[in-house]
Picture 1: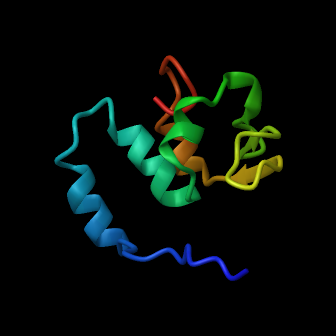
Picture 2 (picture 1 turned 90 degrees about the vertical axis):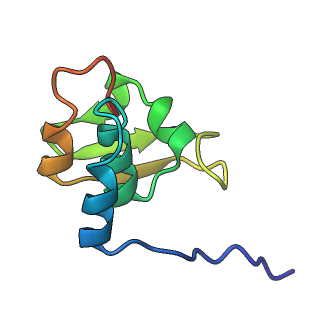
Length: 92
């Protein structure tokens, strides 16, 4: 059976940055992580620090935390990581 879950409506980087500047400060790190990694809100908000390796620039989603139920490693750029430091959780 063919799935029809093709992603649509991508933001170009400049469009995303313009939208992000209007978000409340506490939401901006979550939006940034989502934009650059493609993770869903629930995945980001449920991340725990033990799943995040800032040195290597990766976050691990465990079995059952992804759409297909499989574990996944998400690479992220250091700029995204820098926006999370000093916050209560990995995403903000």
